[in-house]
Amino acid sequence: MALGLVGTFAGVWVGIHYGRRSTKAADQGPKVTVKVTNMVPAYDLPDGSRTLGDHFVGVEAANTGGRPATITGWGVRLPGDRRMVLTRPVNWSTSLPHQLAPGGPPAHFVVPADELRHLHRTDGIPYQEMRPYITLADGTELPGNQSVPLA
Image 1: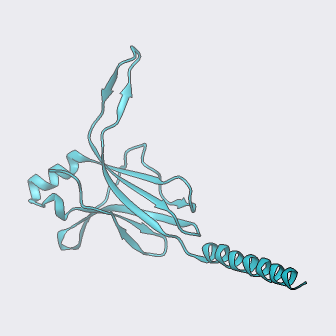
Image 2: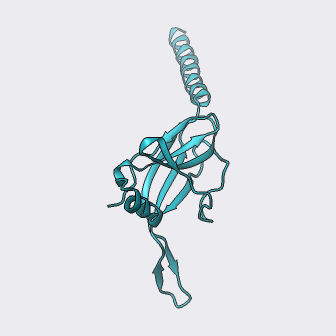
Image 3: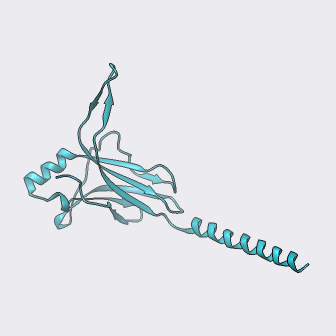
């Protein structure tokens, strides 16, 4: 009988412990990560060959938290609290506002690398000081994991 009681209490403890863990994960707010990459799309041609498209800097936002997050804006932060915002985004960028579901597919935003190179040339802004970011609906601004990866 004693072994039966120990087994019962162990089973109850395991149920409570894991029940609390899953409740904690569900109560956890969104956890959004912002990854910055270089992108060069490849296009398939009718003859079976491929051609490379224009060079872009990509911004990928993913939610690994327990609740949805809504992205309302994104851009590139520049020195002097200035920002570069695309008023005409590339048509294959994720449209805004966009809700990121926990564990769902990431959102993708892109800026033509030529526009960043133009800023670098005309305003003398080093690429290391160009930092992509996203803005959430609650006003939180999340910087990318690195500056613009151009040289």
